[in-house]
Length: 417
Image 1 (cartoon, rainbow, N blue to C red):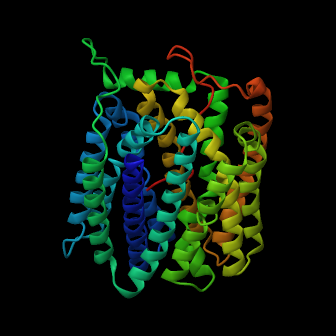
Image 2 (cartoon, rainbow, N blue to C red; image 1 turned 45 degrees about the horizontal axis):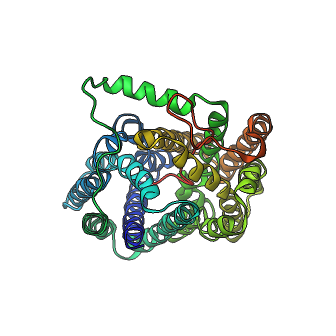
Image 3 (tube, rainbow, N blue to C red; image 1 turned 30 degrees about the vertical axis):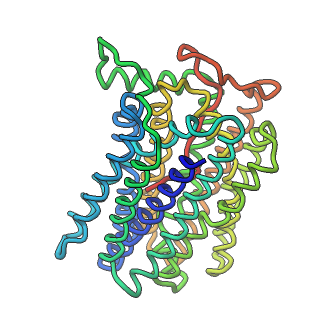
């Protein structure tokens, strides 16, 4: 469909450019300060604004036309990123602009996730979601590798200019290529406060034991994306520079771009759900091998395996969106996504602080291995819990009303910084 092709193009543009800018700023800070902690903090700044955006702003995509919300978010991010190109901009100001630009990410992502079922229905929606997820991951790979090359040969400001241009093009595509639709939520004469709406959203998302378990499965991404947050010091511990850092970041998502379409096309819906536990254990457990301090080539293989096993989140993603009532869909998706992004940001800071505190050549490998081990234990406990609460016969509560929490949850495969 024409609308889906437009949506796909906008995702490809903004994801690649956004990842390029985030990685470029992280490399800039690490190059100037040589501090793993500060580099991790900068990388986390691309994630932490999801606290505010996911809790208080994502619902805007329910109360306003979703196409208009997406165009506005792209325009705002284009202006903020363009401001980063101004010569002489101090690092503190760059980080502040990155924080502000990222505030619009959860709103855009919630609107995108909520409008997709309006464009595609049934199994076409599942396949379309897999295509969008694969595109997002490919964009992250291209942005990560491109950032390493750009910083090494061109510089940071051209990378930021490219990022601003991608947002402009994305907004134009959405505004011209996606049909206007009315707001999903009906106007209320007695509008509750933002805090009350947020509390209602949490009750909707956490009101069912099945949903809570699936949500925690999604939040395991906090453990198996630790290599992203300390990619620069890990590459440096192996004698690598900016290009090696880009390769490490690319390896954390590359294999998923292959696994997602295969998993969606050849594994039946119920089997996808049943495989969540074993795959979650493997995606975290494989990182324990990094504790053996392999060389760069072997490390890239391990990171790729971990990313491929993370494909289990596809089942949670698609079921969640169609299970939540349309008028609450964006808010629920924003809350679920916020947990992932905030958790990742916190994990990156903790991992960076641990590497700096240990102060040894092999400390990045040790931190990654410990994070993988903790995630493995949590994944095993969730697998046991899932066997207890999983709906019999694979029946999901897609038709439940707001008074009954849906029986599945969703989070992004990886955070979109």
